[in-house]
Length: 371
Image 1 (cartoon, rainbow, N blue to C red):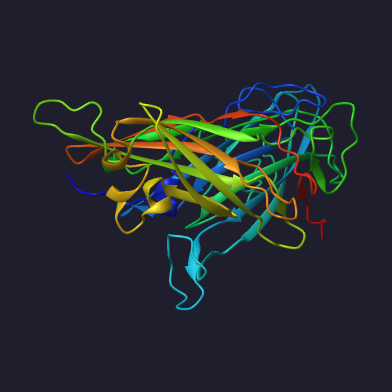
Image 2: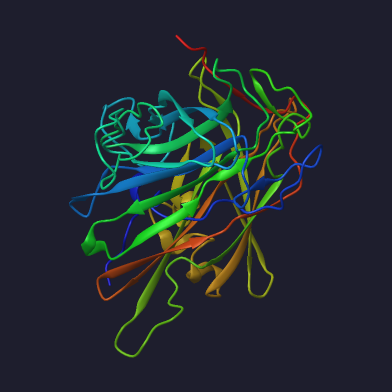
């Protein structure tokens, strides 16, 4: 059984959006079940995997009976070494995210779903029929994103580009892996609802009054890294467990990436507690064992060799800085099961609890003005 290292691209291949109980007004929960005013797709990739291109299909639907507009931003979270200029995977002072954003607008007629393949985008062509990707009612020009790894955020706006508390957008992403990898995965976009009685402005305030706040904690039930949980005689298995996390705050106007320090409290099956921490800048996509022991995964607190049990629960908490600043994160859980040279990819929901409104100010999303 080979040891598999997840890089930014592979880590973003699968997952389930953070799961919460939807509410309105001052209660503040993210949702993967209902329509919202902000959609976050944390794992979008068109980069090569296993020697074969991997792609993502984005699906967005308008749940209302009137036309809806959305302003969307791709965020390139691929990493490069600022000293050598070469690609890198593990965050460090020199391994930094590119943080290049590409924006576009879409509009949907009443109750209209639409989709596009990320690598090819979608052009406006009323003559393309109804049989292929890109057919049907075009939502507007969607740019192609080749060799891309990062996230996609879409915000419901008016026709003139002003944010609106409509809660009419629902999204899903389908990650298409090469056939030899053995799987296709789909996850729901993470939705942030707006208070229907509020009048949002730029920046978008995730304060529990205008838009729902992000969770104060994320709860992640997962297998231990390198554990063998379902082996059969003559066919051992290996679990590789990861996560993709993105900050709730984003500054598209000034192109400044947000950084959030998060603490992991890891509980094994005997309720013994272990801990680790890391920083999420722009986007973090990683095997859990790489967080605290990238050069020797067997020494990680997420690894069965340290935990002593094949299953664990991690509680992910943003850490407040001395000045009171902090910020929420949302994301997806990842689980890859390797057996006999094949890989099966599974989704793991992150359950959010509490409302995070830091003392120094709430999370916010700055939209870049239209040119």
